[in-house]
Image 1: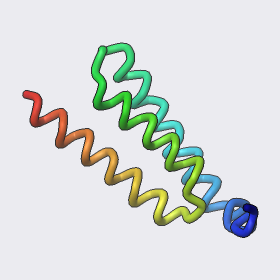
Image 2: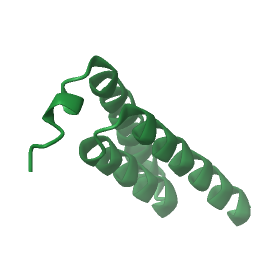
Image 3: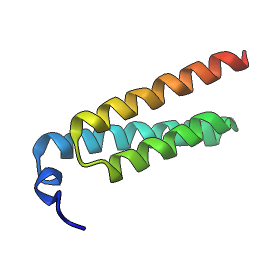
Length: 78
């Protein structure tokens, strides 16, 4: 269960987790206040990614992918 504990204690991983978790929280709050489901789900996904993925590079790539997916899906709705 804790085989990647050294990776979680890496400064880069901790910093990326804080940044992507904060952005995910912002997406969730925005989606909730505006009544839009896509940003809220994207925010939850980004929060989950920042809690589950222990590699800062993979975490960043997945979070950027979620941001692009949310943007693309919102553009489809216009």
